[in-house]
Length: 114
Length: 112
Image 1 (cartoon, chains in turn yellow, brown):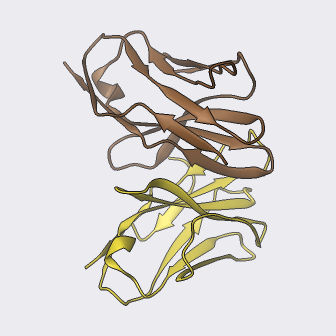
Image 2 (tube, each protein chain N blue to C red):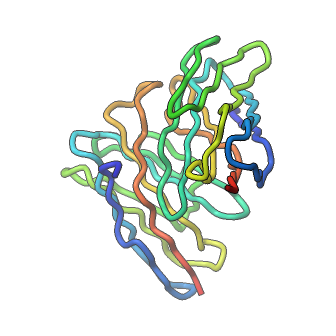
């Protein structure tokens, strides 16, 4: 158990819908990262927050947005869902943002868009 | 930019066989290198890491050496077990860019 929790574990929804994925980082970790794992794209970085502020953006679609709240939990919002958004979405957290700080991964949320 | 090229899978080995999973990288700046493992139905776990050239990361019998001259970080284990069956990801990070850049992953299956 990494200490990072993600809810829900599974999510099945229809095209055009909007969903929210939630992540609670390890106690004391200030940095949260979101990654998408899909069969065709592999594991890709989406976005990073540090202590409530957006710090880095990766290959995140405009239909997707995220935020980190004062209690440091984070939410990833996916809207106007398409079939291709079906993937495993991981959240990771780390204490700091330095080069060697380990990122601890949650168990993921599996999103299926029908 | 940063990229990681990883040995294509899947890889199937018999128990107690020697394992090598190749990983090479390109990076803008000086990277730290990682191997992550994903067991079925679980998230990624850090297996080992190395932060500078010639460092050797090791854990659970796995080893990888940071080779700057060949830009490689190959994963090895001398005698694999059935419990090592998982997907292995090579990854890197560079200073000022804390996101991890992953390889495509290698699915390893160990048969008794």
